[in-house]
Amino acid sequence: MAKLYDLQGKRIFVAGHRGMVGAAITRHLNQRGMEALTVDRTELDLLDQAGVKKWISENRPDVMIVAAAKVGGILANDTRPAEFIYENLVIETNLIDAAYRAGVERVVFLGSSCIYPKFAAQPMSEDALLTGPLEPTNEWYAIAKIAGVKLAQAYRQQYGCRYISAMPTNLYGIGDNFNLQGAHVIPSLMRKAHEAKLSGQAAMEVWGTGTVRREFLFVDDLADAVIFLAENYDEPGPINVGVGEDLTIRDLAELVCSAVGFTGTLEFDASKPDGTPQKLLDVKKISSLGWKAKTALDIGLAATYEWYLANQGELRL
Ligand code: GFB
Image (cartoon, rainbow, N blue to C red; front, side):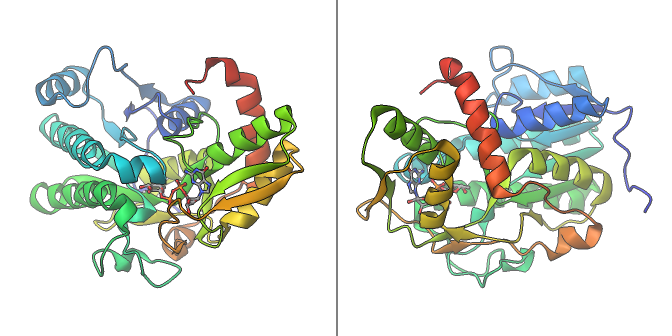
């Protein structure tokens, strides 16, 4: 199938290249001999509208990938709503408007599966957007991400921009955040299991009831999907990026323990939030374009643990 847009030879700005997602996309672009343009936070604050406009008009990327965002796990989302809604709204608005004004040809905006309603039918198709109330623990982040999807769509509708939005499911992998207060479930459980193993603990704590279900995509698979979509998807609505399978948090915790080699028991703390009961994406749309995730969860967990062991000294915990 002929590509709708060819990234070869283009200047591709990856906003947020220090984060897990942006770093993976930058890595994959470089591996394919493509030019990834990046800028450090010390040189450009993405919350600074004038600064973003100036940097983009001076650096003139052809393509922009919006991987910059304020992200975090259930506790961070639930306890810091103002930061999550404000920073995400400002970052995406600054970037997308500046892209339009500088004539950027293509934007890939990255959202999240939490944009869909709390009780959306599973698996959740792209059509579920705005059909019901959101999950309260992350509605602030979700509202900002929905605004980002709509921004990309509005600039397409009014100005004819070829801007698209991709909605990844829960992500994990190389470069993840292992800070227990801010992290998502996989790096948190991995670190807890690792520390429990080293200190010879009999049990480790898992938040919530363990019965809720989540789907997990290895970040390198997301990077591959983003490059694929930049070249092969050009519609106004969002497109889901997932694996099409989920599991309970209890089953996940057991897999993490076996990747780490912790053989103790799990203690569920039901006073911590469970969040949405299930979050599984319908991946028919991206599958019909010919893309699918490659990394099985046990393989991805092993690679993540290996990375954690090798990089522990440099992590901000
Ligand atoms: O990954 P997580 O923080 O995010 O939590 P969400 C997923 C599930 O794992 C929840 C449970 O049911 C947690 O209660 N869990 C068990 C733990 N132990 C732990 C632990 O030690 N740490 C954490 N963090 N969870 C986020 C949203 O929701 O998903 C964001 O808040 C974003 O907005 C992200 O969309 C992808 O899947 O619940």
